Structure formats: C-alpha cells, structure tokens
Image 1: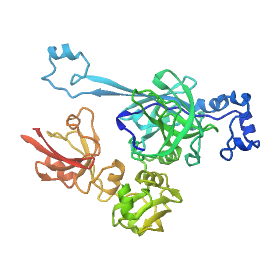
Image 2: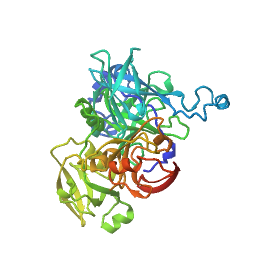
Image 3: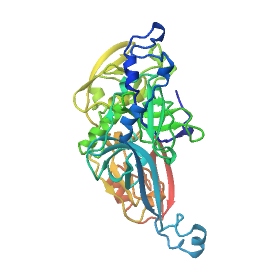
Image 4: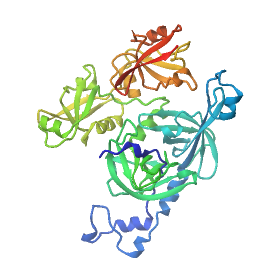
Amino acid sequence: MRLDLRHLVFGAFACAAGVSAAYIERAAEPAPAHAQAVEGSVVPKSRAEITLSFAPVVKKAQPAVVNVFASRVERMPANPFLDDPIFRRFFGEGGGMPGRSNTAQSLGSGVIVDPAGLVVTNNHVIEGMTDVKVALADKREIPAKILLRDPRTDLAVLKLTEGTNFPTMELGDSDALEVGDLALAIGNPFGVGQTVTQGIVSALARTHVGISDYGFFIQTDAAINPGNSGGPLVDMNARVVGINSAIFSKSGGSIGIGFAIPVNMVKSVLLAAKGGGKMVKRPWLGATLQTISQEIAEGLGLDRPTGALLADIDPKGPAADAGLKRGDVIVSIDGQTADDPEAVGYRLGTKPLGGQATLGVLRGGKKIVAQMRLTPAPETPPRDTIKLKGPSPFAGATVVNVSPAVVEEMSVQGAANGVVVSEIEDGSFAQQLNLQRGDVVLAVNDQKIETTRDLEKAVSSRAYYWKITLARGGQVFTTVVGG
C-alpha cells in the first residue's frame, strides 16, 4: 500500500495497556464455537464483559510514560550590512535577524525502559536539539542527556541525569502481534497532558510509508496526534510493542491511521546505547535491492510480485560471499517472509552482529537456501574527517570519505566516489548554501573531488565564484554561487 507522503504528519503517540484480571480469567474459559474466531481470542459473551475496563493495564503502564521537552538556541551569522535600524524596525530585535538568536523548541513523548533512567523516544523529537528535559508522570522534571541518535530508524535514547530506580515498562515482541489485537497509546497530544487512547492493530509490516530508512511499521487506529511522538504502543500485558512515530492525516489530527516502529527494532538501538555506542551498527547485505513489479515478476517467472530483487552486488560483501547473484530474489530471512526491500532491511536490521542468517532465495524459478554472515559494513577507506573552514561556501561543513560504512550509516544513494557531508554547523555558510547531511561533493570548480583532503585543498583560497557539483538522493546537479 502506497500512501500520499504529503499527508504524513509526525505525531505523538501513546502506550497501550492490557485488560483486567477478570477478563483474562474469562478468556481462558472455553468459548462457544460461534465465538472462537482465533485460538486464544474471544468476543464478549455478556453485557458485563463489555463493561470491563483497561484501567488495570493503564495503571501498570502509565508511570513509565514521560513527556520530552527539547530546545536549542539558534544564532544566525552576523551581517553588518543588515544590522541597520530600518531592518530592525521590520524584523525586530530577534525575528531571524542575522547575528541575533532564537530559541527552537520541540515537544514529544517517551517511555522509560530501564530503572537506571533510559528513555526511548523518536529522533525527530530531539533532532538538532541540545537541551532536553523529561517530565515524569509524577510531575517531576529531570534533565536528560542524549546517549544515542539513530536517524535511520527515527529512534533516540536518553539518560535521566538525576535519580534512580525509575518505573519502567517491559519490552514485548512485535513479531507476536496479529492484526486485530487490542492496543493502547499513551502520550501528550497537543501538550494537553498525558492521555490514553485505545484501538487495535490495523496492519503489520506496513512499508512505503517514508518515515525512516527502515520502512516496516505497525499500523494502528488508536488515536495519535502531534505531541505523542516517541510514546509507546502497548499490548494487553502492559508491554511496549512499538514506538509511535507518525500519522496519516490531511488535517494534522488523528483520522485513525497511525504508524509505530516495531519494538524489535527498538531493542537493537537500546543494545547499542547500553554498550556505549554513539551509532547503531547493523548487518551489511552488500547488495542493492529493487522492488519487484508485476512486469518484473512475469519476467522472472514468479507467480506474484513478492520478494526483493538483487539488482547489484558488492563482490566483497556478505551477499556475494553467501553465493548470491545478481537477479536472485530474497523471499525470507530466518524463516520470516520478506515481501520487499524494506522488509529485508528491517529483518537484517534487527539481527545482532556475528553469527549467520538463513536466506530463502528464488533463482531461476527454484528455491535455494543461503547462509550469510552478519557483519558490519567496512570503513574502507578511512573517514579522514575534516571540518572545513576558510572563505568558501563549505565553511562549517564536516566531510568524510565515502565507504560502505558511511553509505549505510547516512543512507547515501549511488555514491561510489566523492566525499560525504556528515554535519552542518548552525549559522554557517554551508547551512546558508543549504548543504545537507548525506550530500556527496563530486567536484568544485571542475576539479574532481575524491577525498576529504582534495576538498580541503580546493576550498582553501578565495575564488570569484564557486561551481559545485553535488549528488543528493541519487541525483546529480551543479550550481554556481558567488565568491
């Protein structure tokens, strides 16, 4: 299912809890044949059962749900030509005037998953922010430091800097979810205060949503609105099964289509944060995957368009080592179905490094099995990180050499050479040029750029103009700016 991404709104989500003990006891009793739709599930058999409450689950889950407040001070570069009383009359003393500061703020939700004070939230809640505070359910406000940001999954891990023995919520198993399961969402929608909403799991493995690199989401109709981002989606045992990240909406409010990151992906991010890592390292496939259309399926002799086609393979990557070839179709990983490239990325992304994964592959109409090593992408050549200075449009940009590790980490598309922009300093000339993280610099003033040292040398002296060739999102373009 493809969605109109113009209507995707990052929203705030909430967490779900379970049913009362009375309901659980009745659910264990044999149900009439007409009521047994799915093994282990029943429909209410009386008016009394219909009036049962989610309150016991909410009471267990709610203390671990928090509000996240993030901010940063933005200072625009000074420009003496604009520091004029006439300009100040129109722009005011702040108002975006160069040389002056503004405060950017963000509001979201989160969930405590460790008694030591580890909080999981969305990366977009704290993206670009420097100061973070967390408000607990008991009204305490505690400063937090950012342990890890993972833009690829839109997840982040915070650490409360004061206190111990915090209330926590247990992590569930998102692979155990079924469509139709009850779910609760707890968060702070529109900043009105902690709120609980209830719904069901509407769909699983929802791809092509465009929220993060790992497009493999739980869809729910539990009401989610802006401000709930980072809050948990909770099952009926008061366990986290997802982190709510976005809604599909034309108005900005909930219309019953929300998306949550599966908790099994959250576990890999938490593991990296607990290990002291600043980034999450995941298994590397070493291949470019392509979605299979109906036409491609017919050409490959497939009965339906499913799986991920290997369009290109790195001869030194794990896929090549496992014996995979261009034109093979990956249909499963460790017995779990992979219907498209997003599913392959998700399944590999939740695997720990080391060991092997079993890939189900279609080749020439026959199914074969391949064993692939779970190793991280290599950092060859080394990054050789440089922060550029001097009188050029690149001043304030940090660049690194292209390597498989950098391509994976920054989701760079089609980069075989050049250098990659990894950071942009606020208020810098590079920011004014609208350089973005993940841009690949290919040439400057018709001089080919192959390493960070090449770029540093090319921009070390003044020029009357700068002719810059960049690659962004797989497309190459050239622009000229004044010196």
